Image 1 (cartoon, rainbow, N blue to C red):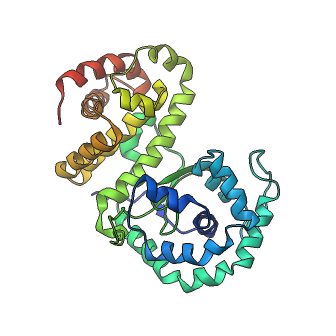
Image 2 (spheres, helix red, strand yellow):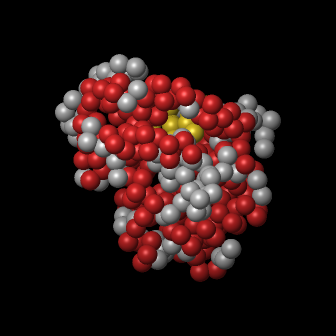
Length: 332
């Protein structure tokens, strides 16, 4: 923990709650359970039961069509956060968005009396807000991220989500903000998800993984010409990992984010929490190279602090070789 002023703002957003409700009426809840069976929050279950009969509403069909085409939730929720509230007006409609979808969403909100439902359920949302606010008191991510991505100008926003999706975080970069929309930690079977303030590792990992992912992707785009020849050297990753993340950039980004989370957990919580996280990532994501990546990033930080490197881009030319060496000798 730190005594510095916190740099994460926690809030709720009705546009997020609207899109979560529309998602509840699609087949997303069923498919997410097929991917990984898990207990869901009572509010999400009740919302789905209430809204499932409206699966043929145009707003829901629009969402279902996007999901069927493989549209990422990040894009869908980014669109929602660009709409005005409560009128849901759009300055510009992206070409991939169904025609008139914002008007259909407005009709869905009115037809379902979602405002009344959310008012009736407001106490559980407020609990998630207070729990999350408590967890981010005194927490700063920007100083930790600076050696890797430089000064972070954007405001860091965390939005707890007790509706859908229940099994993944969503990161949105928009209008000077980096936004993490995150569910509570998954529970198994019929157990309810953990409250946001009972699992620090989950909430910090959720937020940092999204902020880190968006920032390192921007770093990769900004330095694309420098990184292109570096990316010709394959990374020492498993076939399982390659099949999930086929490009060099995807592999680097995924390993970087996981390693950054592990280093943060080790520094701000405990070595045990970091080790537990690394073991889970290796098991579920096929990240056999993660311990080596952590070692390389730790070495970079030491040399950054000593003045050898002024930033991560200076280190990138030697990164693939160092990772290959570390991957042979480093174990958890």
